[in-house]
Image (cartoon, rainbow over all chains, first blue to last red; front, top):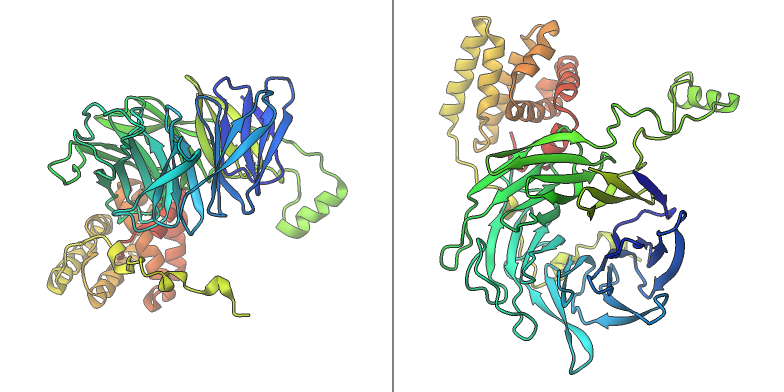
Length: 363
Length: 151
């Protein structure tokens, strides 16, 4: 378990490079790149171009970085030879509200940007004009897209939105993609085919994050009601999206989760407003919460602060407590809510938080 | 300048078509007679001294689709049932409820605290609320806040 204190500002999103030597984090209007291969993280470079807060950053398998921001733009940053500087290219997103999330397709040829303009922009490189252009997934989206996740076949995309719907679309683009194999999500997949559409029984709350399982046979999502939802699909019938073959709503004692990632097909980790990751395990027969990582109820205070006389008076004055047990810090490593959970290695995850930390946890 | 943060920009967007009603999940309509019947049944259970059974019965299938008058009648019965459980039995009673029932209980506690009748019993409701959150965790509060099926 290693914690990196990288920023004094909240980190909305982070991404490690393939070799895990570099990490990119968002900081206000910029993205910072750190070299974390040494004992101490050192700043490599700052990517400056956006003029509103950056909401997401992602690094492709071949090292290109995509960032998107509330200024309604996305940029692709290509590394130059020396590996220290990056050249930005503007992406023609054609949206008129903030971009909220961005993810590279596994092959690095396309990426998806979700936005509050009720569209998902699927972006790809057009060699003729030498720029990145986008096609919009529009129907039947009618609210802000908060998260997107790619199927390993580079064609299917899951997206979660603020109206509580989780949808799976085809993003097949003729000039970029080869024809995908038929799967449980459907057989014929022209662009904008709606393969699945799920909503929880309670009428749906904000979907903070969505993820395909590693085998892409099912998906999981976390919503603002503090639940973790796992859905096993059934194939679509004609042009209608399939109804779920199985739907598990794992209720928790916790505050809502902001993000999740799968470890394997039977295990996933979620983290959110409770500032520590939680592990869920299960199969097609059912899922349950199995343990908390960095559990605050078991942890000793990480920082046992020395109490000076003035602190003692302050705490008595403010909280009516006489000090000895009073501490400013949370008993968890993250001192504020977790904003993103990503897979770091086959048995560990990395998390970023509003406290400006990036932490790697063993699972 | 006008407070631009309060401008409803969706009103100026011709493509925006989502209406609040469309976000409501479909709930089956419940006629008032059915609600009254359930309330009567619960009342009988309470008078037989089986307040816990009455509570489980009331929280099992709340009338989401009833009109507001019927919902108020139902709420009154829930509050009455809650107040007929002995103080010392509250924690164990909550432990006997399943997760669904606990979440529904939180909904009624919040609604109760906001209603005239509930305010007279606020001590009892707060006590129940405290104990329920101890058992069900803060998750039940966020579920109350985000659930679009209203009691």
